[in-house]
Length: 211
Image (cartoon, rainbow, N blue to C red; front, side, top):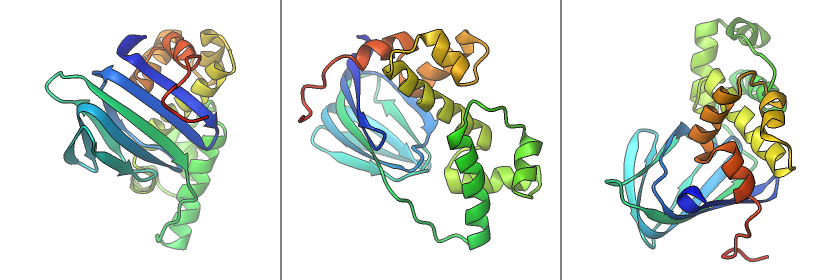
C-alpha cells in the first residue's frame, strides 16, 4: 500500500489513521466538528496550524481543534510513522449569535448535501450577506472558503461511499464530480491516497488499535 496509510472508521464519530514510514504531506484543510489527536511513533512531522509551524518528534503528540486550518508536511523528505484519531465533538462558539446562525446554517447546508451545486451568489443570498462578506465570515468560522469546504465535504462523503463498497465512478458522480480525473486529484490531495488505494486501505485491519 502506497505510503502504508491505513484508515479505519469505527462509526461516524471516530476515525483512526495509521501512517507507517509515510512521506505524505497534506495542504491546508480542516476537520469540521471533529477534534484531531496525533501521536508520532517514529521520525518527525511538521504541523502548520493557523500559520504556526511546529515539529513533532517520536513520542510527541498534538491536537487540532475543529474547523482549524492546518497542514501536514514531512521534514526534509524523511519518513514518519504516526497514529491520528479524529473524534466528533459538540463545538461551541462565542461569536455573536446572528453570525453563528448565518455561518452555521450555510455550513450545515453544505454538510448535508455537498454534492449540490452552490453558487457564491446563491450562498450569499441564503444567509442575506454580500458575497465578499459571506466568504470572509465563513472562512473566519470554518477555516476554509465555502468552495474549499464543499470540496472537502464531497471527499469525506466519497470516503464513506467507498467504505460501503461503491465503485470509484459511482462515488465520484454521487458526490457531484462530473469528471473522474478531477475527483481523483481532489481525493488524493485531501486523503493522501487515490480512491482505489483508499478502498484497499480500509479493508486492512488496523492491528495496533483495540477492538
